[in-house]
Image 1 (cartoon, helix red, strand yellow):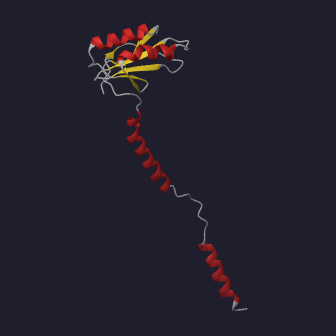
Image 2: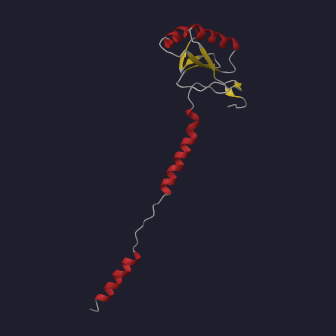
Image 3: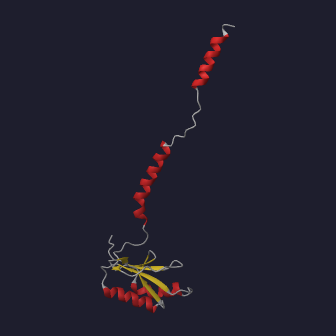
Length: 147
């Protein structure tokens, strides 16, 4: 039996040194989260929708909207876009009449670059009115904010 005693001690020593590892290694998780954070921080400014225009500044309050409205954008080069689709000023009235024929709300939002001639904006507004749209809302930036 003398041979069994050292064998038992070696087995006990082996069992005492072995522990179960119950800690989760979060380092790879933190690395992945930091990479995702950087990706989102870089891409978030690019997610702005619409056509880039330099809006005039105003102190008026923002309007609350119940549903998505059509946005008419006039760029610095006098290009007209209706929700990202380009139109010419001459055909705008007929297109707006067709779009608003079956709509209950006769409202449109106008975004015009601050560098566009006033006369061109007024001509566009006249085309909108001739199309039978009853309400025209102007989109501006809050006073003091400049991109």
